[in-house]
Length: 319
Image (cartoon, rainbow, N blue to C red; front, top):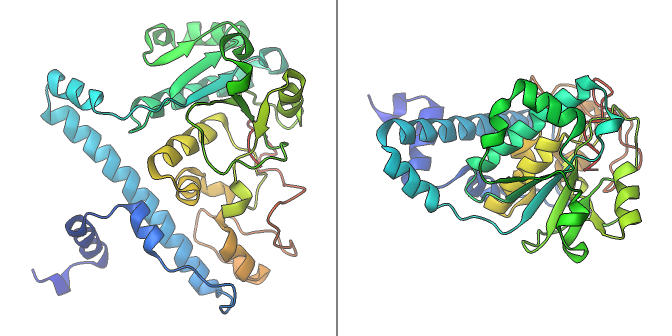
């Protein structure tokens, strides 16, 4: 079969394999739209979103296939050798579970699942972090004991009943909270970044920021507004923040990290694309994406983010 008869997707994949380029490199090589360029059309925006959606799917499938091939073609010794070659980060990532008494059992179970996801993603990351689970006890521990007894055998994680302030030096701590006026531009691998382990349905706004200021520790928010325009409330689940940081450690590219991890229901589009397109251009986006609210002005730092579809705030860590 000639190359002319091959589907475009196969041709594209073959070219990528020959050139050895990754999804991240490919996206970074795409030309940026200058500030003075013509506004992007509805059809162009739709095509752009569809391309990004397909790239994410292909990247996930490729990583999954690589893991399966490694498991099926290698014996235990080979797997251990590959594991030793992983470039471990010295960055500490802490999930603060001190909000146990503020959540009902349903939310505790959601937090438990998010922690499971964080653990799994860190175990297979190319740059795994030093993972801490602090203030572990109460409803969360009981739920884990009853529904996930294997947690006691988890590796490469520090599960502590103590508060993070008792385990890590004050000057090393940075609390990630959407209410912080400080925007994080890079990650300092000598620091310990704290994620609030709270699924609160929007009932406890500003709680993590208050805690950070009361303990006198540094605080910051991830630079989401610099790269992403979202239709929904800019507060993400614990595991999404965790995974964004893992992705950034691998790519050193915030935009790629955000668009690789953000759920499609958030209706995320690149900030510069959103600014160039009109509200009418957002009315027909690819399936799985939400359109931006009509009449909403384009701002670098939204003041009043909206709730997501369920009106749920998963964890007060991002703006």
